[in-house]
Length: 251
Length: 263
Image (cartoon, rainbow over all chains, first blue to last red; front, side, top):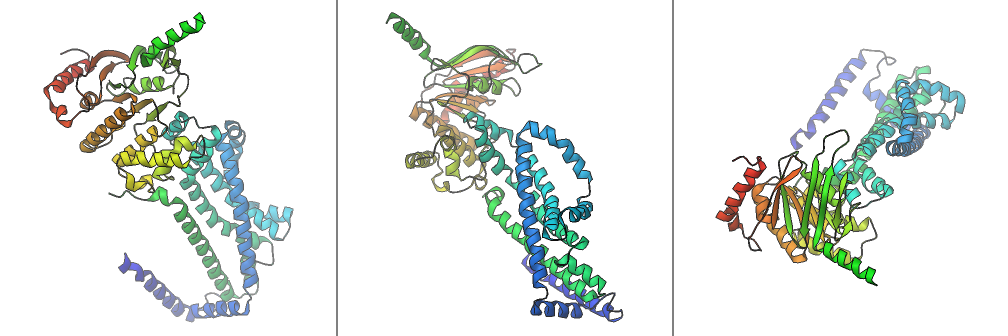
């Protein structure tokens, strides 16, 4: 494995060289050369031009994630644990799956204005569903033998929920969280596309209006880095939390 | 006063058998009875084994005896008291170790206690002692996924013993283990139960295992006990007894009983 570690880097280098070569034959408006993009990125970072936009999008992603995931988790537990809630909400859950959530973004802009609130709501809505579904599944499909063990030991319903169902379902819940994190960036950026003057999504729309393609590429790179950082963060958290579940047998 | 005296006499009489099944019948909803009028007495400190093919109702009988299932007819008495729910005096070992992956071995063993109250330092000491007796003193802080199958079974047994149960129910706990590990665990289980005077109901489909462990074996065929025999061998048992003529002959009898008496 270690010997292979260098290859992706070589691929990247080749890709950049090819890009540079083809960019030279084209207008900068269509395909700016990587060197030009890098320069724009560097200057933007040095001058602090990107900073408020990065902060804005990160805040939206963070708030949306926290709001959407906590609501999804709580509702997931309610629906997984209480038959009544499950029956009450399941038809709506199925119906809501069919709605493309991003298509609701204009409506939220209308309701919550062009400020940060509407973007946070859109992001939260998108993060809500993967967590909701995975939590429902996790709580509902607990290992029947472990349930029986808790019954033999005379555990209460609360104990069974908090000491068996939730910790036992953590791998599934974390899988939902991983999906939510990736979707969160999409939610925030699309929200900014539709209305707003700040944030990386708004910057992409602005660069389109100014026909500043190198800026657009620079922002795309920033978004990619933001997404990757988030993903790495989740992987790190997952590794810490799920370590006992994953460890292989010693033998 | 005479009334109390009478009550004590009755209770005393019942106490002769530690666990008593009185004409138990059970059927799953919409199905034919799976347990048919079974009566059984286990004296204090005895080790009883129930043998039978898969699907003959062994596990159901164990669940009835442990109070996990309510009998449709008949009653179960543990130390003279009717069993309606799992008794805190009884430990239970499942077919699979059923350990919580997110808790350390020590915390898994302490689970029955920590569900009721915060474990004291004495509880910790007892758990450590039990794990020591089960040959796992080095694995206290490890997680179950780090252990082998046999080690996991040992943790499950230690967990069943942590509350000092007077009665132990085991449901084919060693079925998934290799033969040598199984023999080691059988010896350790026997030693522990004898040391602590625990009464045991053990379910298995392995004739040799049943005979080696038990003071008394019973064979179950289609929801009925068709055969019961005492195993008159000295305890502690030694692995050479496994291959002795006595167990071999008894084994043949049991084998015939399992396949319906036809020789």
